[in-house]
Length: 329
Image 1 (tube, rainbow, N blue to C red):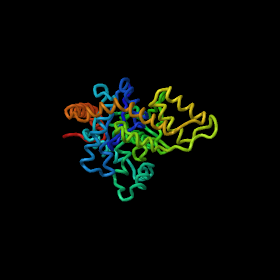
Image 2: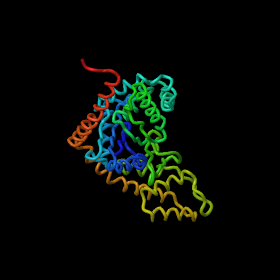
Image 3: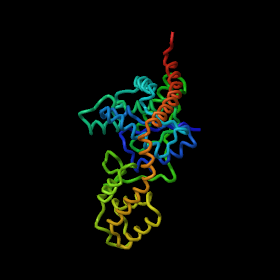
């Protein structure tokens, strides 16, 4: 059984792209793998959230994970800051991470360009903390998107480096886990690219139906096809991609035929798409609202997760400390 580790920044509000890009697959993975899913609240400090926002965002993401089907009896779901062993491994890994290689990472250069007034050390060492998140559980598989592939490669580099320095195969070299089969890249509402919260083109899994309707009706479209069976431009293909994952096949086929026959009315398509998204989200939203208000259940889940994650992390850290030379008198 493979050990799988995956995390999400605690910036709140999971969206359809998160669900179809990863969470749907996580729900299946937890049945066949030793899974650790964590909410990366330490990572979020690179953007200096307020204390209230930090706590509320963690609560939001935790409740959404659970509402989507992550089962704390099957998988370990925990809050990153509940496992202090990660920070010690992060410190120890930093001693063998070098300034030049960290400055060259794409994630650091992108963030430094976007927030030049806040180029903090946490941004620079983000790949090291990500490596600690992965290596603390000796993960063999890590689900990653394109934007995190370089950081995973850094984790692989740090694992090899540690193994070479101390002469033991302490850490497995984590492999990227690529979803196959029904994986779908969910586009945003702006006519191009993938759905993302930071891009402002996302539809939240637990978003209010009124807001979903407004967003979908404003989605980018065009004046309509001028030839029978013509190729759909990207913005229109995006709408059909969304419809393909939330609507029935009959609904999709109906509007696809309308498009191919130059009879499409985008207003009708968007109204239908909005209602289908709302209906798709409804069970998740209902579960979320119940879980979000249940303080006792959330405490139980985080306590269970922290205990299991710390047990795993402590074993790894004890081995690492012994190899480095830290011993009690």
